[in-house]
Image 1: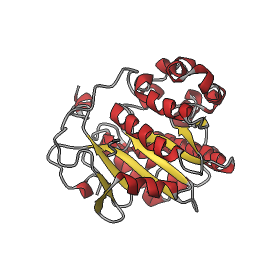
Image 2 (image 1 turned 120 degrees about the vertical axis):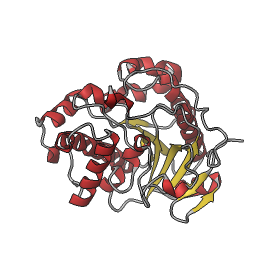
Image 3 (image 1 turned 90 degrees about the horizontal axis):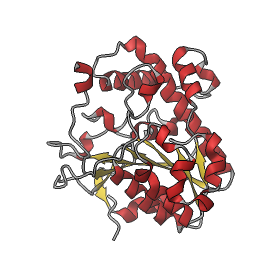
Image 4 (image 1 turned 180 degrees about the horizontal axis):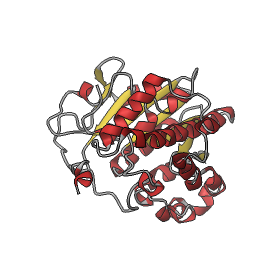
Length: 308
């Protein structure tokens, strides 16, 4: 049997946290294999799925039924939790049996590598990481993400990349590219302020708010790029299943904001937190449709690096 399992206090669960203005800090610090997600295995929420719409726990079948009815399915994650990728792959496997054929859209892969993804069945899931130069990308090890590729190849599902290039990110941070060049539907003032609030909090107050504007622009540009590839995938007759960090999957200021009129479903996989037993306390109302709780990889203090 497959086990699916006000802002959160650990803000790094829903927003990938850059450590500074430089591009390198916008990526995961090292491409290493994630530790097993074994901390707080006995947490009361572990393995349970919370519906934000009904304020109650639901079954895997409920999530699958909702996903089958959607135009787009977002599977949010904490990047270094390999359990999230295994659960995403299991859910993708369930959806692949549906009449409307899904396609896998990756936050982590650039559109320039779509030719590699198109040859995935020839390359094989194990070799795909090397073909994509994944070890140089800054993301956690390919072996953590490989279950998703295995599932896509097994079901002959199309795959697309939607990441910005390093040059594009540098230009956005440095002002060399205007945000409207990427974002046709910018956030309204309230949502942009909320995004800046979370960026400020995730940096533990160590980065001046004025310095966070470039990071917010990059965040919005990434979301818009994901939305463009998602729209193209729909036009090709597929149901996009988008693999992205929880911050990108958010309804209130993430990729769904850039997809008006689409029937979007957002499922995010989230680590449980010690002493936090009420599922409603893990995310702002309406940010996600379903929150799927998992054990933690670690309990490191996310602000420790700013105190060095």
